[in-house]
Image 1: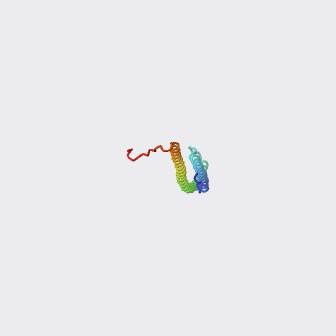
Image 2 (image 1 turned 90 degrees about the horizontal axis):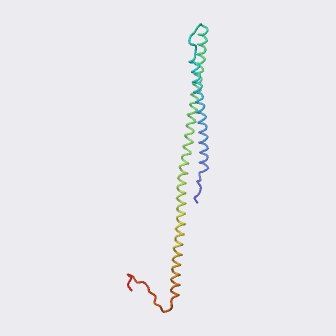
Amino acid sequence: MARAFSLLGLLRLRHAQQDQAAGHLAEANDRLRDAADRRLAAKRTLDDGPAQVTDAAMLSAIAASRASSRAMLAELDAVAARRRAEADEAQTAFGAARRAAIGLEKLEAAHAVEAAAEDLRTEQAALDEIAGQSWRVRQAEAAASSTAAAAARPAGTPTQTPTPGGAQ
């Protein structure tokens, strides 16, 4: 059996860091969507207004409302920009964590290939040894049986030895 991947602990750490970075990225994207939704709701509120102005007090109230809404929109734009920057930073951190994990994953895959090849070499050597032993056993059995056959023949019986080319 091949030895274990020696950097497995570091790979687990990198995967944990990657998971943590992915969590931060998801949170940042969620906050960014929330800020965009609040800005859209504020803009819709600004667009909703009375169709007709009946007196100066109403005109003054509408102007104050619009100024307040514009200030709120500017503030929401600043929040959205800050959240976008946070999301970009989280994306960068996730990319860096992913790259660190990918490098170790490639090393682990190469180790697995090397370990499998080593296991196959070891298995083949064992099979070759078994085959060699059985061949030697068969040779020893054949030699023993020919010796036993020669011993079982009566003395003085000529033994025939094959000659090259089959001539007798």
